[in-house]
Amino acid sequence: MEIAPGICVGDNIRFGKPVITGTRVPIDLILGKLAGGMTCKEVMKEYEITHEDILAVLDYAAKSFAT
Image (cartoon, rainbow, N blue to C red):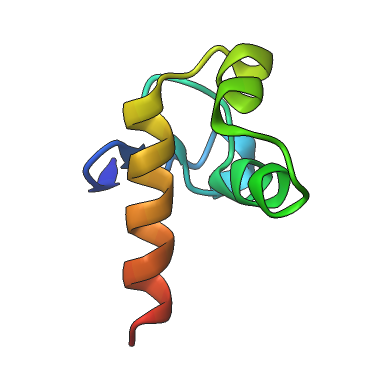
């Protein structure tokens, strides 16, 4: 089930954690890698995701903390 553009959750995917749509890559993993100093290009290469996927993660995180 898509909970935000590019972000979905499913009971049988990563224990119900939000992931990038079409992958099993949890958003908290991507946020942690970026916060730890990896560049967007490094994260994209390591997890085979797109720049748009990273932007979706950042947008979801920003909106989640804005409440």
